[in-house]
Image (cartoon, rainbow, N blue to C red; front, top):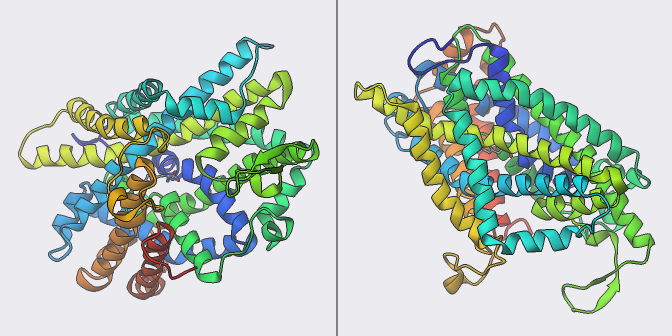
Amino acid sequence: MEQNHRGAWASNIGFLMAAIGSAVGLGNIWGFPYKMGKSGGFTFLIAYLALAIFVGFIVMVSELAMGRKVGKGVIGCYHTLSKKFKWVGWLAVFAPFIIMSFYSVLGGYCIEYMALNMGNLAFAGAEIKTGTDLFGAMLTNQFGCVVFTLLFIVICYLINRGGISGGIEKFNKIGMPALFVMLVIIIIRSLTLDGAVEGLKFMFVPGYAVKAGFIPEAPNFLTVLATAGGQMFFSLSLAMGVMFTYGSYLDKKENLVRNSTVIVVADTIVAMMAGLAVIPAAVANGLTSINAGTTVIDAATGVERAMTLADIKLNGPSLLFVTLQDVFNAMGSIGPLFGVIFYLLVLIAAISSAISLVEVIATFFLDRAAEKGKKGSRKKIVLIVCLAILVEATLVAVDGLGSNGLWVPGQATFGVHGWNDNWLDFMDMMSEGIAMPLGALLMSLMVGYEIKPSIVLDEVHLSSKARIDGFYKICVKVITPIGMILVLLGQLNDFGFISIFG
Ligand code: PFF
């Protein structure tokens, strides 16, 4: 049911599945639960929700409304709407391109782990490698990493070439419910493991992470706010052109306020569910090792010592590819089956986010072709975009999270910091660290002070009677810019450029 040459969502539910699919990704699974636990459980959740309502929701409504109003991708929107902020659209296309450099590598890792667990299932009884050994071997196998990255990009290519309703919508309409069901299966397994309750306490009880010894000290309030803001932005796929792009394919009769609310709420629920799936299992398994008298080599002193709760890796790639693999290994003959289900669900989450990033860039080229009076072949455009992504992703894949010692910009001059440890961190710094928060700050200033909030509100009122005008204006003019400055500073702090939050 493509309505014009650009295409359109076949249904509102299809749009919602795709937008939720973009939001639900690796950020939910490996970022949110750990950040919540480390930053005081419910305290973090409240900060997160407040930022999601006053900043995330506002930016979401604005992006969807401007995208739908102009009917073009993000660069076209900024060009049409603003004189002063025209160039910001470029920032919002640059960032998805850079994010894809590492997102596709991580997606490739998921495919590899899914295959490994399938192998363990098929050859039950054969020797099974530990998470640490598997991950180390994978990172240093550069050819293998490039092949699996390529496979991930090919999957995205096949979906994006199908178009908005024929590719993205179709994938998400099946993928999202499937992901939900698989998540529930993993949650049930995770929560029924001995010691799972310690993981729940880590996630939810304020101060427990420090008291029990998971982390040495609690972060201060500003750090918590900045962490929550950065996480919220990445998780909701904001300031990346995604919601402009997806909004540009949305029918005028669809309610933007309700849709934005559903996306924010669903993303937060899935992040919490992901926490219930991974943290209790990881902690329970860690406790078993501690009780069995496992020893580790201390990173600082190089001396062997007893394992403690602080040694359980609950964040980032190590959580997914070391800690959880060990959890599945320890489950006996049924473990590989849970492994296959889990890595498949993470893979679906990664694909549904990645295709939204590819679509931002593809839509830009499609619109440009249309402006020149040409039809523009979606298949050709998506192919070229995916090839360009493959080039940059190869660099990240070959680097293997720094295992293979590739040169990273700035290392010779500044030494190794958070932002230039390896190529993945470098790409993450440029996109999540700078382009995203800066883009959102500039967007709120543009709407608040140049083109005025009424542009967004008029579009919103086409399909919604919600009385959000007063709330929207205060947020977009004052609260959102302040929130964005905080997030920007927090990101610069996290990446080691400045040191103001401790
Ligand atoms: N929201 C995705 C996640 O949480 O992993 C990642 C992402 C997708 C970020 C799309 C930005 C984006 F535009």
